Image (cartoon, rainbow, N blue to C red; front, side, top):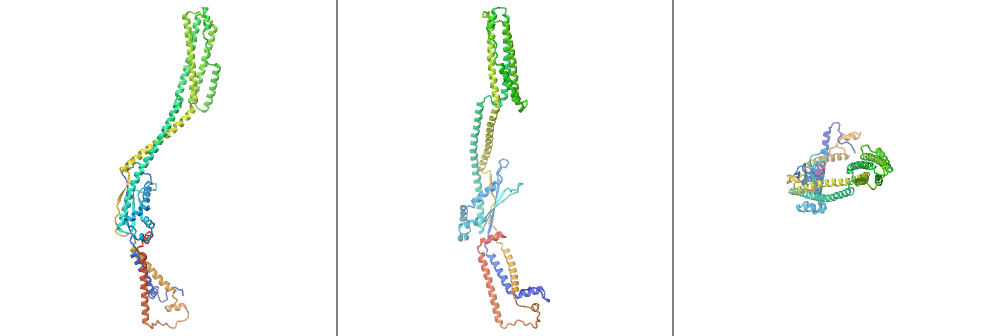
Length: 539
């Protein structure tokens, strides 16, 4: 019946009662305790040893970072991952397992893929280095760790892995530098072709628009101003020639034949229609007014229009003065005769020839002014087109310069990698055979086994006492019923031999159980590498 087996009686302490229970259940406690102790001892004894070897590889740079730009952050870690994946490949691991005869027991009872998976789990890479401000760790070295069954083999395997890392790093960096240089060389050729193409477009544009380019606007304005001055001077010269001709005709007015000569002389004609000239001035004033609403007074187009308007106004005034004087001369002077003296006739012919030359020069200057005005009017459109061409040319040149700089750096890196002067791996500490196994920790297993055995023995005793319905003391009986106890009869063993036989049988059975438990534990632990690795991970 359920009850608390350790509840103290009136005249008994808890310790005495516990001692009484333990004495009564000593065989059960002994069997449970020894069974678990034997199991723990066999388990710790027959677990296979695992050995671990470590090699330290240093990442060093032969040239200062101030001379050659260091690799980008994360590039080293990526390269280490690539090398690790190459090592963990099926072909590489198969060769490694065959070369060093790894996992002979596992290979005998498991497929190759299982062996390779175990090898991958036994190879570890740990990166070491200071932590940067960004929170990333700058790798300056890394540790190669290999865990295996054989003491001497783990060191050889670890050193082989370290040597492979060093060789693969040199090969990968050299090939990467050469590939980068070749790639940039191709990109540089394409960029050079683009630069030549844009330069050719600019040259063709400047060839088609000689004298019309935006950068020649100032020169065109200066030329236009000079042509206007030349036109004004031409008008003054024509007036001067007309005055000379008028004086010459006045000098010969006393002769009757001079009238015929004056009449036969070519009259001064306007080289331009005054009405058309006035309309032109009005149009330019309207254009100036519109331009002043969009630009300041210092804008080149505003200055140009003001100068043109002033020149046309001066020209109009000069034309009016010339026409007036010519009219007065024709009214006052009679038509000259053909019978002038040779000297006067030659002088008059020279003046007429000079006047014709000046008129021809005036027409040429006006045509030139029209051409330069047309250039200045088309300058904004050419400016936009030239800006686009120049921008494309500059962008292509900037790209070419950038690629050239990167190509020079790539060539320098390739040269350094060829001479083994770049970033390289150096084995700082080679792996050596370990002094003892990495796992299992047998002492800890034994201590845990003893604690577990003691706890199990106590638990078994308490459980047996809890499930036992019999009374062992008068106090237990008195507490159970109110019927008074008249007498207590002690246990009378009628057959001592039978009791000894039962005890012997119980001891033999307990011994068999202990031996079987130990044998089972030894069988489970023997060559059980997976169990050892599990215990290492959970510890």
